[in-house]
Length: 145
Image (cartoon, rainbow, N blue to C red):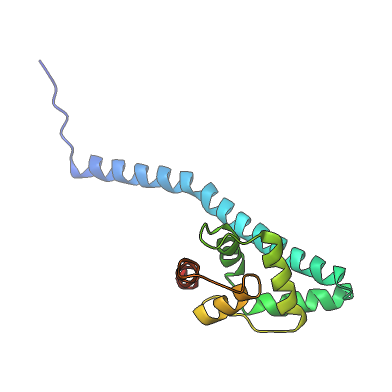
């Protein structure tokens, strides 16, 4: 005699609940890791800009305040920053991007990472002659949420 296992509503519900519980438990460390990585990048970027300002002769408190003001407007700065120097079309050096951030902070220039025109102006301080591919890359970066 063979037994046939038939999924009833109750057994289906139990399987569904167990699988959702396991999935949510396994996803939790990734979410925390992403949050930690973003915070670490943000802190690192802020610290790099602050260090650059201090190396230009600014007092530590003034450098911290200027860096705070620059990044206060741009909540997504670390992600956009990494897109700028990692993009294959732009090929910008990380050091040049940080140096330009420091100049913007020093002279209290506004920078909007969601504005294509603002990004083009920013990158033109590093690379004055942009071609069509580089401009397309900047448009893509500006549109990143």
